[in-house]
Length: 397
Image 1: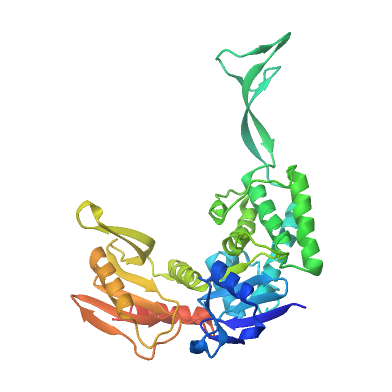
Image 2: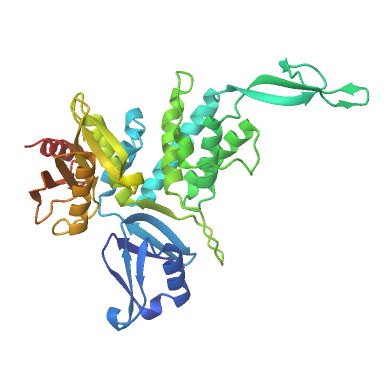
């Protein structure tokens, strides 16, 4: 029988030494040590296993008999809001009618079902097609004939031609097919939803005439351009971006485990969400630069990637902002030093550290002409209201 361990972010979870086989403990430590901190049984842990998740939420199928459910500190419905807002899903009202999920695997299942249903609808309406340029050697002229000499077969002249052909075998469709294929093979879906995902994958794949070895895609391929002809693909690609971002490629493994790990880096998601929210809600004429690169020193000896740089209506850097998905008693010295250096490198007089919960000891100091503050963009309760409160505090003198 399969056992599931429910771990919550940053909270120690202890197991008796004999309740976790050493081989599985070693595998968890070797393959997912950056996701779950693994302390082996020792006097320090009272001869128990101690597992602490490191800011990740999701699902780890460690073995057919043991799965780990990594629960976020954020309520799942608020996590859905973060994901929808960050990946632009809310713009298309795709999430209307989704039932509140009690776990991240439940949310994953609902979004997979949503992608399958939308794909089936797209197949019924007809797939988007586009013209693709081909260059082939033909026994007849098609399109434009290349001028250079061509080879000949006995009694059959072969002509190298360049021509356009309208086809559905384009990235817009292939990307969705690849994502559905990964979902169908993930092992995380069951019952009716698993069958619906498989059906959508099979119909789309057959419609494109592609085999099992279709071209692989990554989340970077999901950044597409749209026209009025393919605008309805945008939400489908947003869902693909979500799944391709968080379905972890399978590591080589022994044994029969086939389920794909599904992991959300909460610190990364929080950082992206804060950036997306600010970009959509800043006052007129203010702008935000995400992951701005700054170099200092001779021959650009030092190079920084600043989370967020806020620009005023005159186009001048006004403030650097760094999101921290953690809740210490007070900002750490390294975090303080980091944003202070960022502000000085960018010529700003203000720097802000953003946390998901109010800190017991808030920071508001001025050093070397730079005001450094700690502010809160809370993920508890009404996230939209929290965002407006954060924005107001951002511009408070």
